[in-house]
Length: 284
Image (cartoon, rainbow, N blue to C red; front, side, top):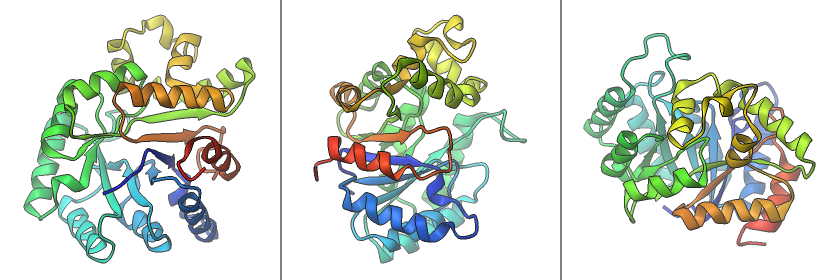
């Protein structure tokens, strides 16, 4: 499965609002034409959401980033995945995640729950090489190495990418998500970043990982310190974005997934995708 070097992460690409489907298909086709290697459907998509975009395009890989294991049945996921793979081989990547205790009513140990979900996927015929795991800590990263094609870490730094590569080894896929603010004014860029960070700084899975990376409690307070924002967001002009992408690639990323932050999580920032493509994708 060829994901290329750069992908796009966006939750609006599986918006089911009336009238949204046409623009979503058009955006997917344009992302392919711009030279991106993969589309990552954010915020708990299902296989069916990916199937629509796979059918609308001809080359680009479509991934779930991330399918929530608490809200889907493993056998049904495996059946949908198999049907999509039979019609469109090597075009769909199943991204799986264990979500957060604050968001799931009957949440329990996420590592054990993920192992059980993977066991059920395997029993239903799903192949490890066709999936990746949302992984931050060492145990989930090791599980990504042993039971999947690799890992898709979210809200991380280049230092985390380097640590993840050490755990994964050389062969597994490492596809970190990077948040991008195309704004050169520091105050405006950091304000946009802090607005986006607000939810994540209430979720211990993320804050715990940031603390492991060497940030202090003071970095997590008041919307996040400048140090935290500058390490977890790529903001500025194209030179700054290229530099941050290169940092992750040098640290071991195979495929970098860009999430353009605009203040509206369900918008399709197509102008910004074009700008990034012009400066980053091989087709440029």
